[in-house]
Image 1 (cartoon, rainbow, N blue to C red):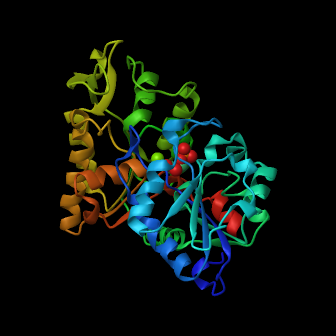
Image 2: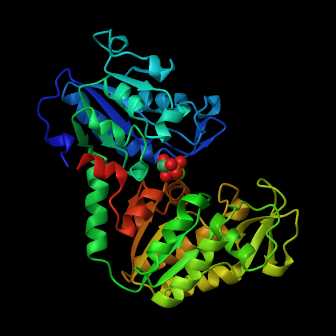
Length: 392
Ligand code: 3PG
Ligand code: MG
């Protein structure tokens, strides 16, 4: 992979910079800016090299439609303030933007195109869409490690049409994860939570042979509880998961990997409401499982105590409401305690997990914190990510 930091001749070149500015938003307000802060060095490097920057990113999952709440506007504002530069957000249909529309002002150095996922061609890895994006610039840089597991037009197909490079943050994350996986110490425990059930449930199968314990919390745990015959009420869940869950339990026996899922839960009547601890056979139809319960916390902490490495992606509950943050906070506390004694190597990753750790001021107590969640898990599977493959 060619790295952009080795490129000496970028003066006045137009650079398409693919970033993952998919930050958590609450009513149009950014609740955690880590993914923005991490790529500031790349932008500063490009500015210093005299390049003209066209930023590309997605936010959320608008599924090929313009969704005003998922505009890059708040992100553009945050970048403007942090870089002290004038940045133009181009809201015009990306498919109609021409290279000659950009940088007509001599002073203009950075523009940002609107959410790539407003166009269905992006997730389809569409050839013409990728070619069109590529036509806007001289050089392409992928500094979006956290979405490099997606074979999308701006990540994968685009490298066919323009000289392509890895960015500073992408290099940093790959180097760190390469080192971590090559030096990893057993017993290894992986905690997988969060709300993206469909993206992660298939990854688990491939992680079973590599780890000693896999702890399933968050949304995915609901599917397991349902599979085990428990009522999960109105909790988030994915359809048609029973076959893969069966495979997970089968493989785990074969590979001697322990699968841990909730023994008790914390429920609410709605996301913003109060919480109540419940036994698994006591959840009603009108309730939502929003966190793990105290028995589960205890079981998880015992496993962390016995582990030499902990890899964590995805919160244990809906931590955005403090009533459902206890599971994630107690797990964090236990990891920190072991980390302070130097008896564990801890890695956490993912937009929401990073936001959680920042919220409770725990980020510095982990050995490595990756911006990547899904990409981090797929990297752990050992396969080459589509976005990385496209650069190689
Ligand atoms: C992430 O937050 O993991 C990346 O931005 C990718 O988002 P996605 O899971 O919607 O593809
Ligand atoms: Mg995310």
